[in-house]
Structure formats: C-alpha cells, structure tokens
Image 1 (cartoon, rainbow, N blue to C red):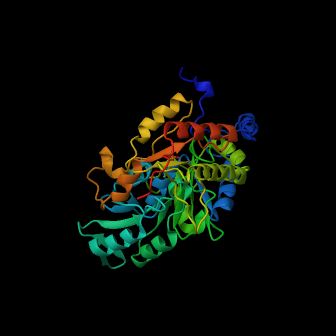
Image 2 (cartoon, rainbow, N blue to C red):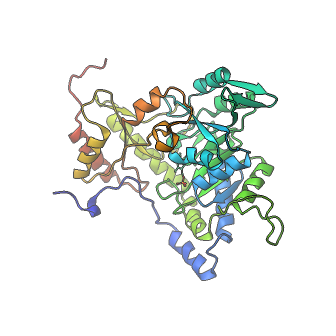
Image 3 (cartoon, rainbow, N blue to C red):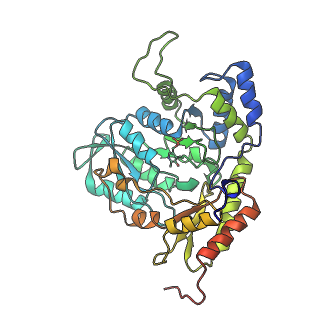
Length: 394
Ligand SMILES: *Cc1c(COP(=O)(O)O)cnc(C)c1O
C-alpha cells in the first residue's frame, strides 16, 4: 500500500521551531508588516555578519539577482557569462535586463563554472576595446555569474582573477551558500562585486520567500538598495530612474531573524546529513557522491547521490521506487541550454552538465531530518539499488 503523506519523509522542509511565531506575532501587534520595520534592519545586520559584507534584503533571490545585475550596468543585448547547470533564475535575471546568458560548462569536481573554460573562451572568442570586452558577435560581455551550486563554493580565486584581467564585474549567485567559507573567509568576502542569497522555503535559512544582496563596495550596494526601493530620490514621489519594488517585508524578515539565530546549527545539520550519506554510499558500486571540496567548507544545501553511468535505473525510476518506501527524492536542475527560453543562447560544449544532470538524485535533507529517517531513506535506496558483489571498477 502506498504510504500516506503523513509518514512520507519529505525532501527539504523548513525548521520553524525557534522564535519564528513569536516574531511574526510582534509584527502583527506592532502593525509593522510591510517593507519598513525593525526586523528588516536586524535581518540585514545578521546576514551581513554571516556573509562578511553589508547586505540589502530583497523580496526573493531572483529579485536580488536582477537588482544586482542592473546595478552593475547590464544592458539589453549584452552577454552575461554563467554555468549552464544552475536554477533558471540565474538566466532569468540576465534576461530581465534584456541580456543574454552565455552558458558555459561546469567542472565535474565541484559542479561549478569551469575556470579553464571561462578563460579559454574569453581569450578565443572576445576582443578587448578600451576597458570593455566584446564577443565575436559584437555583443559586449557585461558580467560573469559564478554559481555556488548546492552551497559549494565556485573557484572564486581563479574566476575573479580572470574577470579582473578583462575588467568584468562578478555577481555570484550564492543562493544556497550562506554558511560556506574558504580559508576562514565567508562567502561574501571572496572577491565578487556582489553576491546574492535566496531565503526561499526550501533553502537552509528561509523567510518564506526572500533574498539578500551583499557587497563590500558601499556605493554599489547603495545603488542596489536604491533600485530595490523604486529608485526614490528625496522624501516625496520623485524617482530618478526605473526602479523595482523588490523590498523584503518585515513579516518575511521576522521569520528570517528567527532562522538566522540558529544559522550555525542549521548549517551543521546539513553538513552532518551530507557526511552520513557519503559514509553510507562511498563504497557502493552503483553510486557516486556529491562534490566534496578539499579547500573550502560547503554549506551542503542539498544532499544525495549520483547514479553511475551504465546503471540500469534512471533517477526518475529510483525516485518513483523510493516513493513507495515513503521517501521523497528528486532529480536536479535541468541545464539552462536545454530550457525552452534559452535554446538559442550561446553556449560552450556541455559534456559535463549534460552527463551529470541526468544522474543526480537529491535525497531527504531537511535540517530537521532525524537519524532514524535518514537511515530509513538509505535502507530504501540500498533495497532498490543494491551494491553489486564482485563488480569490478573499470
Ligand atoms: C533558489 C535559487 C535561486 C532563486 O531564489 P528565489 O529566492 O527562489 O528567487 C536562484 N539561484 C539558485 C542557484 C538557487 O538555488
């Protein structure tokens, strides 16, 4: 008999067991429910502290990405470099500016933008003119957007250094990377001009919906704030350009503050879940593990397994089978170059992204996942896809 929803182990649900309810009630009581209020200021301060750079809270991660690209001056018809393996919002943010994503492949080791390929394609396909660079199609290359996929850091040292050589601004899609660090440096302090977080419901820290843009350049960040608040100039109804209504509300920030109070514990839970899956499946003949960086600390947003090539089951089939065991699972992002709105976008070869995305299976990884439920999930996967005795690695 199929399990009921109540005993289904969910993929990723928020843990709202802290002060979320209390703070929401304070919003209601005080009538500060909208885009001004003490929780918004407090949330920005908490995100800035964790990210290592000042923050502007936004209505969503997508809104933050759009505001960040607008602030660094991305214009219609220009190109924005990004990995093809990302959530559609990265590409959409460029498209909202009228720009076109230039889709590059990822490294197999990190699932992040391949710095060698990025350097090679800029050298081969672009020409500098003054302080700007132009693609062979005549389009200006306006920015590069590394994505810290799953909260594992892209190689910012190399990507930022290559971008600097060409005068390209760097806007990091750090949607799920709050809590990640390299050499003790938090994610907002790794050289990007702006980094953008998401606080959607399935992220490690949630506001229900929400986002934040962080950056060390005070003038640039002030422009982000200006753009997200309808570009109002002065006290009246004067607006000096076309801005956006992208502010986070006090209600969202109330939930966010309660979540941020528990950031270290929530991140630690995510990392522990990753380690448990890795330990359980590292010797499995049919499975590979999620990326395991050696030179940085991942925020481990989602965890799961990668089905090896030539295994007779597809992630979708395993997902259906896991459901009959009461375990929710999910395939991962379909690359942008295979998405209808972006089929014509310029792209590199996509060997890695095309191979990988069809083999990734995300397993239950809520920060509140109990050891018992994780053990149940792993046992179900072992049942459906047993390790083969005597199978030889080729
Ligand atoms: C979640 C996510 C976003 C979108 O954030 P929203 O808050 O849902 O708008 C963008 N990029 C990546 C890589 C994400 O994981």
